[in-house]
Image 1 (cartoon, helix red, strand yellow):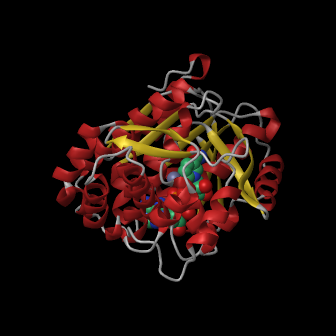
Image 2: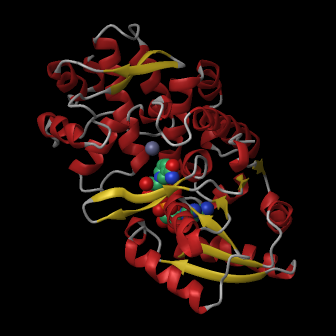
Length: 361
Ligand code: NAD
Ligand code: ZN
């Protein structure tokens, strides 16, 4: 349960439970009309079959498919979806259901938040990143040519149904990238969970359903706690989720958003943050080593690509939207499960932490 007063909702986590999607929706928002938004990869793998099942169970489905990939998370695509929905007679008695990764979820959620001033929104996330991160918390939106996630809203879902079996078809690289966010939750909020991940790397890499159910459940709970404390990112509590992300965003920007997946950039970014935490004496010696060891056994990168210039990355970090009041405030670690915001970190130390070799610290 994500407890947000009137906007509270449930996240149901299971294996094979997407078979009961119709019941999940109808129990929360009685309706006859469901607008399913999916992408061109997920359609054939899962969304067509799930939509057919909704139809079999008596719901009228309008299936809208976007091209897979980040470029679809744009104003033109939102316009196309709004227009199709109007043409097809979608009204305020309908609900929107996203079946896909974070791109589908963010776009469909934004369209749901804005069409006729807001329709109920459900999510059936199909990437690990979406199951543990983007489907929880209510941030929806689209990109502008000048910046990612620059137009959006806080629009909490009416319910999220997570079926870990849907992850079976996820490409290896996407799966690992999602695991970077999983490791992040352990580092920032839960030392015991971090140790669980270390002890279950084999199950993680084999995508064992029981391990995945536990992992997704724990991450959703941890994120829900943060969101409950700071729903609209005003108190500062939500900032802890940015651990590794200021570095990561700079790495993504420096590589043109094509070379590294978000989670890969975050894995390198977390390594930079860990090294900096150690260098300024916030975290104990050996902290980075332990974090990197887990990331590496999952198959994630932990070194800044050698062709990237640390000075340029630092410059990009200053341009990240989280810089406030002229200060570069970074989320750094004191130990596993304990992070905080640090300002005034010397540039020299940041440059060294970025520096290409992980082992150097
Ligand atoms: P994505 O939605 O592009 O999915 C990654 C790829 O996997 C796509 O090619 C997709 O078609 C494919 N795919 C999805 N599910 C699959 C499955 N089960 N089997 C096979 N292939 C599958 O990317 P993502 O990593 O899920 O999400 C990234 C987006 O999420 C970014 O736009 C980011 O800004 C956003 N995001 C939002 C939040 C939030 O709080 N709203 C948080 C983090 C990230
Ligand atoms: Zn992230």
